[in-house]
Length: 388
Image (cartoon, rainbow, N blue to C red; front, side, top):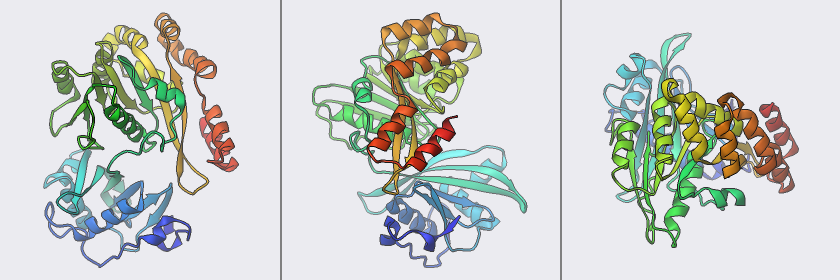
């Protein structure tokens, strides 16, 4: 862990210094948080990937995978409680102490037309000094970078917008899954040759895309549980709204996976995310998340509807920032037929073979990044060790 003063001279943080005026993190929950808003706005402008508040610890942020502490005293119980109740509401601490986490958006208004948005997750923890909280805050960019800025491979660009079927983007937390899907969605909206009706549901919504000026397409975004109580409720309504595209923020349980697969086989272009370390593991994740009583029929439906899987990880790049490495596989009719006929426990083997012959493996992505001098040999070796 580094102090703020340790940030290298070449990093952009030298241009932005948080001027800690010594104000309280929160003076009045839900109304006034001078220290908190100041620090979070500064970190957002810095390009930080994450901001952390933990009971009995100093506040910190992460910039290009390096962690930095803020030179303030560690949070005590009262300060941590005020931060939680400000970010969530008066019953924030009660919720955490009751064994529930929360995942919400927090907005700082800079002017009548400009806001900063943050994705907040909070969890109750245990420490050597008693119970505490861990608040993880991810700054959300105003709009996702265009696909060309994200260095998206031509094969993905050819396959991410099927007329119908399932596109899955997988990876670890913080690997840029939502940013990649956001870039894909903006590209769809800006396509002058398409007339799309895009419906998105997430918990929470990260990028607000109604500001994108589309020639012919539209997008409607709903947040769980703010606008609708569940993904299941969203899907029920979506089927009556004639969408061309459906975006499900994350498949994290059986209900969400079931509804996503049903949307994909119902004639919609459906895209979602899940947590997995590679394409083969993503296939395994799809099967595991299908409810047991319907697993056989749902896995067959998934195999028949799969169009593209992209697995992504972010790696420190030669410019000191981060670059995306991707393993991906586009599914043709022959591969879908193989999966439909194969037992589910053979899906990882089948997809591993297909990645090598008709997709892009991580080894191939590493070789390309090295050739383009986007990553160092040391970074490449680190990724190879992680993949073992």
